Length: 186
Image (cartoon, rainbow, N blue to C red; front, top):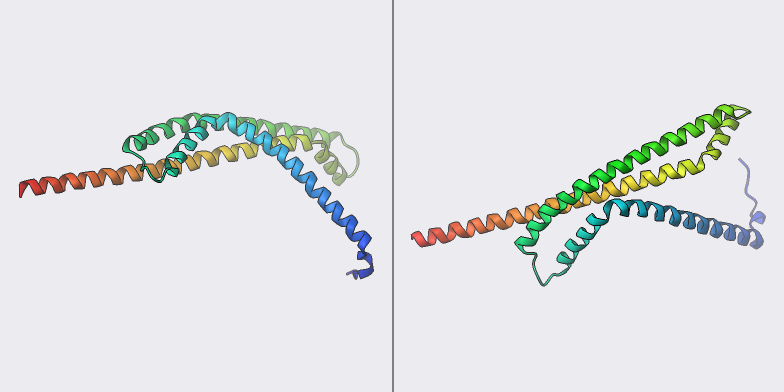
């Protein structure tokens, strides 16, 4: 194993290295922001109605001074499944696009590899380099599908919680009715 010479890390090299790292981080953040923007555009095209409704539910929850009414709970229980129906359909369509993008990436990789010259490693490296855009496209669709699925999963959690609250309220109402009936009969 090679020994590290402390003289190799003088102030000049340290500053150059620091600048290179900062530039690298900046470049990665810019690329990530661009990819995030693409993914968010795709997700919004599928989830905008669901997002808007979940924001509405959040405003109901944020208003701690006013408890959520039974009518609002009923609305949540009826609306979320309807929105999930359409969002789920859009998620499947996005999944088709993801599959197609993966196929295109694989086809281009295979064709590039087949016609490249050199060793197997050189062909692999060349094909991978030539399919970077297709790989990014596949990644965008994959991330969009994951985000859409997460939103659907979270909406289902809200739905299940709402059903529990509504069931508890109905049980309390039934209990109070039974208690009133017993009091009247005595």
